[in-house]
Image (cartoon, rainbow over all chains, first blue to last red; front, side, top):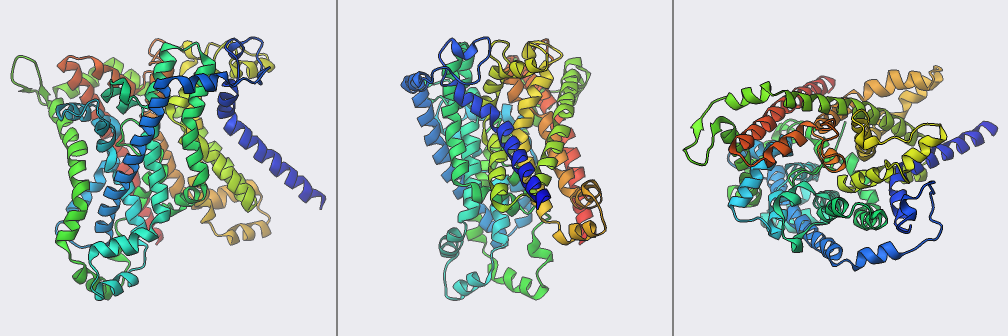
Length: 273
Length: 331
């Protein structure tokens, strides 16, 4: 009895330590946003503000450039996620369920990009999109990343594990491939779509280097671009910067909290063994 | 991390599936079923329509840039004359450039600072979470996952703030043990370790979850048997957990090493490669060279990127082959 109580306490203490140390940078970012301009860099150091003020959060939300960056990034991320799910799940279905000529060849063509590091094509991708006249458009942020080999692979893996019997019955009843895809596969794919969709959303939301290469138009500025720019131009306004960073990180964290069950399962879904 | 939209970075999970062997459709199904399926599934037109968007997009935004990189790395471009084929000359220039080698060394140091730490922390955390009850384990899994979704930009900004001499929490904490204050990001000896900390923080969560998934796959009965024999935690770890998770651990080690060699956004934002180039990682070196507008610099940086790609790509393909063939023997 005694040892098991001790064990329980030790478990909770350790768990609390893990949570605290993991969340420390984020917590401190949040708290610093509540500090006044001089207090935020004050010596001697103080963890909590003397007076909690909302001013930084209010001020950053009154900055039209910040709000616009948040909105533009959100719109882009939603379109990106939807397009990405569509394109990749179509291809995934074809590779999982259909037989066609040169399948093996197309498979290699579609899957190899997974192993090509971003840097090997980042610079020439920039040249390509500027030749296509795509610079400073929403399209340049969205279109180049839509087709993603890893996402396609992940969805296909899920389709391969989907029982084939229902589909065969539907085929015998004369349903077309498209109907089978829409009416049998899509409804079953909720879980895998959430995992892959969250991944796409995060990749878009957190992107920094691609936006700084391709976007100069302030109207299209992305949130991470805004934050990094703020940091180099107004780097001493730490309270404001921390408030902005908190608000910029919030949507991604909320997304994870909403879909946590899917995501944690998703890691297992990946079939790592 | 996220360099262009092409990299689905944070999804270590998605990348991890690369491990899976080729389509199980072929081998695992009984032969008879397979023939039946392949006959009635022959659907060229539908299939081509379905893969067309992906094929076209990858063609324009991945294959074309890749081919173009190869082209630029073997031709000397100038504003006044036609491109001249120079063969492997740029490769020679890059390989003879001391700055390139220095950046490789810095990348390797960064790997050394981060990868063992990530692996150890993740292993210990996963071992611990495995022993927790369902609810607590759920909470911990979500918590450790959260840093993974924070962008490198936000992490960089927060850590710059945390490293400050005035009001920086890290110097404050070190003050309790009588150390500091340190100017972490402007001291050439401290800058690289200092950017490694956010690197570890961003990566350990997903590593923990993947290890945990591997641990859950080890039958509980092995541990029970070992416990009956009187094996302690260390023995169980070294004789059961680690050997049975060899592939997962190797996979994580390789992906973390490759990701570490390519670290780019943290030094870009936190130190711009400085002080005195002490944090000039290979990709940052390539990126900075590219920003120099001369055609020579463009070809030079692309060639450097390709060399890195060859080396890292070869390493990962070899290791994954190894894992796969090992799997085949197990099965």
